[in-house]
Length: 111
Length: 114
Image (cartoon, rainbow over all chains, first blue to last red; front, side, top):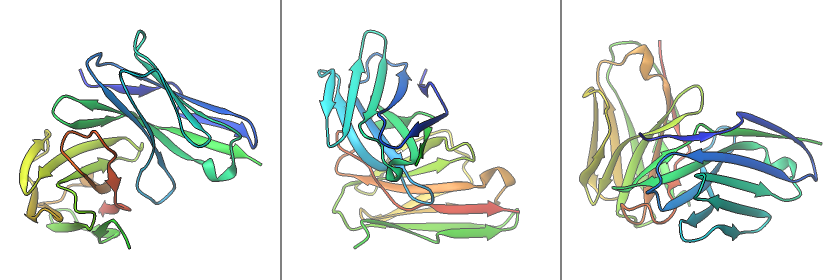
């Protein structure tokens, strides 16, 4: 069935530490994955994406890792800042162009 | 310039009423979407239109009727509102229907049904 899940609903980290947010997906045929960030009162915003022919992709302070063997996706944020506090969603592109979102992990950054 | 704009931002109404949420995108995208976000932050796709044609229609009650007068606009009309319709509704757009690029979301419209 369609299911994208995150391991932890809330993650609390100290400012300056690295954050790792995890996501498990169920459809082994999915070929494209995206991480979104949603700040309070706003719509989700694109952070980084990865295709299934890659296992790692880096952006500015963010890295996405894809493990197709265990159908696992993670988002790593380096040197987490207060502005990183938000809800993070992984999303999986299904056949037919439907983007299925996971339930979200709330990242809290402690000063 | 706001890329995807939706109005109203807040909507409070009584059960049984009919209401509409409007959405416009100025990105020149071909594809637009409506997503519903519940109180637990779960985002679920409702509809998708590509160039004014419906391409995704999830299991949504037929009280919900999307309308796309042109590819830059996708409005959502809801008849006979129920308590369970209370949620934040997000409009989004993408360059193509295959989601091979990012979705651009609006700021959301919070609907509260009393």
